[in-house]
Length: 351
Image (cartoon, rainbow, N blue to C red; front, side, top):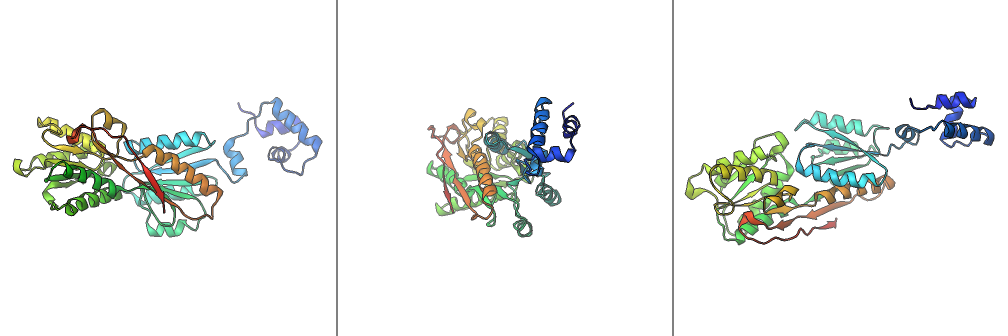
């Protein structure tokens, strides 16, 4: 059984309030009494509870993170960066998982995590922050950092999804493809929206028409459609097109979906890039092992940077809001038909 301040008070012959004042370094205690209490605490090997100490200091050394999908590869790699960074700083992380598309649960988690004594700050991941929420919480004076999402009133760390999708599509165009399809996630997701914009812009700016038959978006709600199942179903729909109408190349809005798409091709005795060239998005660890050409975004670095940004905000609550945008880079492997491997090169800029 752990030692409590009641045990110290009893053995030192003082009140519990006196023990509390000594442990919190309050000046209104005599030197003799302070020394006696500290000696008893040492002899009993007293270990103060970190959370209780935090409450006394109005600081918990805990950061809350509200994340849509714990099992999504993107978030797993971002969380690894957060965990590695946060451990070096003596902080803990409190995770809140959301059911998809449940605004009431989102606000409930946000309200709980911003209550006094819960966490020193909150990080929101890939979640659109409605203007009414933003207006309410920007006056709470509780640090909020957005990761993979943006609002002008809060610090944010994002990736230029439109630019990444544009680069993927432009690469396929440069290889001579003219019927280029896209397998997208659920269009309710902001990253899915931005990646579609980049795909369509690349086609139009390079003299190719946007053909709705070659565009498949997922209606699957799980993981906002960023799933292997969604990729498989969308590829089957592509393969149901007449042979002369099928795309010769496809940009897929995530690596996990691309794996589902490749599986559907195998089930139809087709291969990438021989029958259809494939480019994914994310560069998760598995992408390298299957030779997937993809758009790399710095997931681990985003996690590390988000912790640094939160600590900056905790020490300077009235500082200017900062936004960091990463530019994703094309990583060429086998599935697009151009056999060259390029290292990921990531740059970022402050606005």
